[in-house]
Length: 339
Length: 160
Image 1 (tube, chains in turn green, red):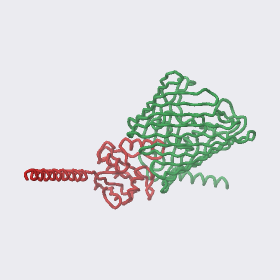
Image 2 (spheres, one colour; image 1 turned 90 degrees about the horizontal axis):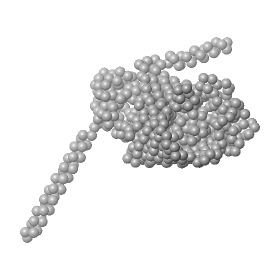
Image 3 (cartoon, helix red, strand yellow; image 1 turned 45 degrees about the horizontal axis):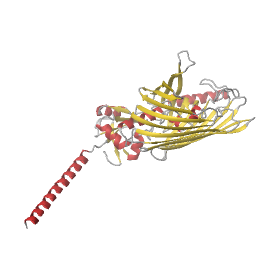
Image 4 (cartoon, chains in turn orange, green; image 1 turned 180 degrees about the vertical axis):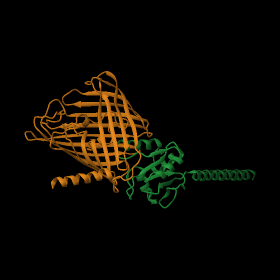
């Protein structure tokens, strides 16, 4: 009886997924790419370097299904060829109704604005480097799983994301942890250029998982992340501020809190020329075992010149203060392109 | 007496020049207004409604609506931003330069939030696309009489 019920449910899901689209369109596939080159001076050492090469593919499969893929080629010293290929996103989207979609695959976890907007397109980044909370792995950048997404609903253009996926410490194809990660995010866009959002991420990171620094976890960590973000990209000003409050709990050490935030501001001069500032801060509580407890503050000042929508030049100075290491000063110039 | 007469002559000459200047100013202004390009919204007979508000049109053309009320998928067709109609569309609908409109769409599609419009080089190409794709909506400078296409009025007007 239970088997029959299961077969009926599976058949119903198959009908919804594969038979609902009645009108079939010709496949439309687009391939775009992004790349960047940099030169930087750090500790009196002058370096030239290439950044990531990002291949971005979208394809409309039929009236309801579409595909999005993002693959990055990057320098990896441990590789035999010194380069590695990384699948950053593979998303199959099914439009359920109106602006409500079901997405399966590997996503950029929709926990904050930056992670859900810029992805690996350096030409879109307002600054050369990503905020510190990315490098410090405060937020889970990717999640492989399934999500429900709604956008531009009602007058305030409400949007939501509900995601269930493999948690931290798992691979893209296998999760030996019975607990799955959960992400819930909402945002509104009450006026042109303004977006206000908040999210909650929950995961149980199993014992033995690699920490964000050297070593592995001796105990399982119950992780909850609360994030808030405000962004405004208007004709004259650009403002982006995001903060994450992390709670890592173990049965042995209790709850440790982490605060990570950044604030970016830019002023548009003659549309294409944007001087900007960004401040980042990471603050950990004593006893933190999953994150690398190295309280850090960073100041960034730079200018961006958008030659056109596919070419951006940035010049940026960054000063970073660490708790454990000596200060870092870096001057970087970047040419980022889309093609 | 002669001096007063000369002054009158100078004043009336000034008035004449001023009148001529104002006339030319008005004529140029009128002429410029007359040349201001208008746009028309055409759509496939399936999908888009026959009438919309300007705010709704802008929302649709910014990729904020995936499906029409009858469930048909929205397909957007625009003239390339380098064409006169494309430039007028960028100004009147997006209030952006052509370059910024292209960046706007690249960012949206990169985030996986919307399908980029079909950018057409000729009006014939755009009309054909709209007529052959249910749910398609496009912007032109004049209405089209081709079968399978209707004009969608914006705020009660066939052009704006």
